[in-house]
Image (cartoon, rainbow, N blue to C red):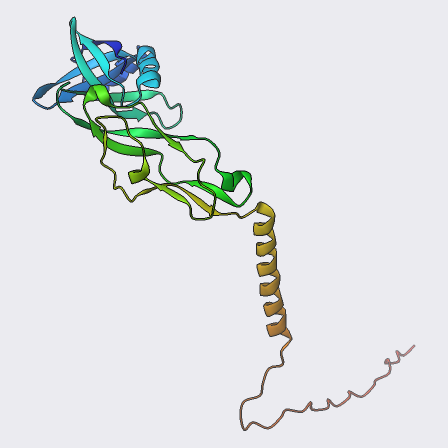
Length: 239
């Protein structure tokens, strides 16, 4: 696995005052690890973004602090809710001879025959798998070939994945990664919704048109004729 270098500086500014650092395009961060004292640092925001795009959370990064290189993995990246700019990050310092756990992204490769033949749709149920390996053996991604998925309910489990040497899956082996689901077109869904709405409307109209039953034992009510008011002629006015 390739190593990527990132320069860092120790920092004394903590708490709410770190906003001052962000205004200077500096990203506040921490370095921690097993048997490693936590260190507060800053890295250049732009440099970190480039490194993160290249290494992700499984690529080994050489963090340079005071001319000393530390092998680290990127963890816990906090992003702004709107701009998606990094606000804080943790670097986990690793022992190159000790295995670590990490989440590796999944990449779908190929086209499932069930999809190309319009038999079903491909359901992507997992987008990453947790694995355990030496830091230098961690893969950047895990490829999943779907060329053998031909029928409804055809599935690929975590236990079916081909992992690099030295890499072991931590995610349960019977967890479903991808699966062929039933094909439901937009037209079929719209038609089903229209039929359901028409059926509901028909039930409402039937209920409204049904006569109201009289209480048991009650005599039927008949309309009582109304006496006609006597006609009156306009009063004559005396001249």
